[in-house]
Every structure is written in C-alpha cells, then in structure tokens.
Image (cartoon, rainbow, N blue to C red; front, top):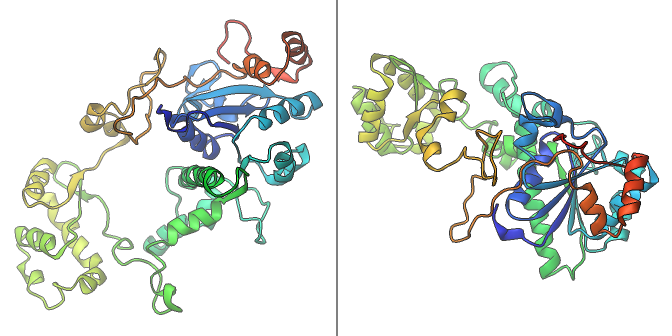
Length: 404
C-alpha cells in the first residue's frame, strides 16, 4: 500500500465484489478501511478455493488492507457500536439496498446527524430519481440492462454476458473516484461538511457501453448507433498456424504496411483507402482480410513481422498464460505484498505505482471480526463491556486458533 490517504478512515458496509473491490483500492492508497460484517461474514469469504478458513480466493482478492468487525446490526448494541465508528470516520461506502440500510437506522440523514463531515457513498443498482430505484441489482442484471449484452447482440445477433463481472468492477472504479472527489471538495470548498454520493450501476454501465457507440444518436438521431470498427464481427483474435494473435493496424500508414506485406496492394490503391472515415466504414472487410490471411505462418512469425513493421500486435493469452506472462512476472504483479505471505502464492497487486513514494507492506485479508476488540476499545468501550457484547452476540470475534 501507499500512504496517499493516510489518516482517512472509511467505514465499509459492502459485500461480494463491487464494494469490496472499491474499498480495497482506497485501502491500497493508505486509507484505514473498517469492514463491517454480519456475524456470518461477507458471503465471499466462504466461496472456494480456500487459502485459510474463512478466506476464499474471491474474498482475498478484494479485502486486503482492511480491518474487520462483525456486528449484529439487528441488536441495539450492534447498532450503537456502528454509530460510534461512524462518528470517527471520514467516509462510509455501502452497496446494500438503500431501504434496508434506512430501516436499520443508517441512511444518509441519520449518518449525517452522527457525523456532519461524513462522505456517504451509496453504490446502488439504479439512480434514486428513476422508476427502477430500489430494485435489486446484480452484475448479470446490470450487464443486460446497461447494454453490455446488447453490444454482442448488435454484432452477433444474440446477446451475451462478458465472462467476467464487468458491471461490478466498473462500478467499483466509479465509487473510488466519487469518494475521493467528495473528500477533496469537503476540504477545499465544502467547509468541512460531507455529502451524499450516489453511484448507480445501471448509469455507470450504460455510460461505458454507449461511450463510443452513441455515434449518430449524439446529434438528434443523425445516423445509427454502434462504432463501425468495434462492431465488426471480424474484430477478434486472428488464428495463425499454431494459435492466435492480436493485431491492430490503426493509421493509414500502418494499414498500408500490413496490406502490402499481405500482397493486398489492390486495397491500398482504392480511392477510399486514405480516408479514415471511409476506411472505418469498411472495418469488417479489412479485418476479414486479416482473419483469412494469418493461418499460413506461426504466431511467432507474424508477431516478428508486425513488430518489424511497427504495427501494434501481441499474443492472445489464455488465463493460464496470463498468470505466467513474463512482463507481469518482471514487474512483480502477482507477488503478494504481505509481510508474511503463506498461504498466498499469488496476489493481484495494485496496478498503479506512485513513483517516488515508498510502499508499505499490505495488511492480509482479515479474519472475520479480527479487529473487533481493538476497534471497540478505540471508540470507548472498556474490556469488560467488550466481553459482555461478545457474549451477547452483538459482536463476533475469531475463535482461538482459527482464521475465520
């Protein structure tokens, strides 16, 4: 982690991926993240494979650099502990349905009354001003409603999900900049007062889907939607004699060098070839030439040729090959940054590097409730009061000798 946000305390009431991924990034930048969990923990803790009891791989990859306190928020004692923690925080991030959190007594107005400086970020499925407000939202539902599946539909004639949780991870990145922007505003122009920040998954995903695809609809429906180049069915990894490669001639000069190398001077001699606009309209034809031409040589031969022509190209990695990629190995991308690594053979470090700042060892993903006693002490509970709360079930701490 890096000490960029040192001194900031963020309450994290999130589960699975969207919220935990966002707060982990903030933790990677040095913020103190206090993860509030139910007595049975974040569901992702228990999804195999398991590195330690209560630390599944999905949990581990989204919850380093956090402290965990497990509270029964249906109990008045559990609620009071959370109220005290909120009173010490700079921000709160949640991805619960807002009405559920409101019923527990931790909506925006209630939290602002506890702490006027609090930045309160609600990662919700749909914006609260629209007719979908309050509906449940998961990645598949938002990929479908937000246009991700529709991109494949427009290109291939049938919708399909990305084989990754695109909407969740995209939403997480929006949460990060939204919280940082609100914190910066609080310090510079907000008079030290916090604000409510709403990050709706549908809107974030729709913006992502439509960015380059709004096209003619930007100007009173002057033309169709969809960017010609990315909508080409021939825009794909191209088969070679022994595998696949990616190659993307983009400029006129790059296309000319590639087509000349493939013996297609008939294309470069056409009237439309020198126009970026006209060439973009013929993306499917041009990509089709690549798709039908590369099966005669090996991947290594084509990559050497295209690199020699100064044309963007690269290998197509399987997941297994990606984990073994020499560049990622050289930059230490998979090396766990914990002071003590076992049982972690690989991690996914923060991809951004702040040159000139010395990194601090990461905190390992916490056991369920691992920091409960310490955090209760920090907000004024005596040792005796803490033990009473544990005995009552309002607070859950790890069983001696177990990780979760």
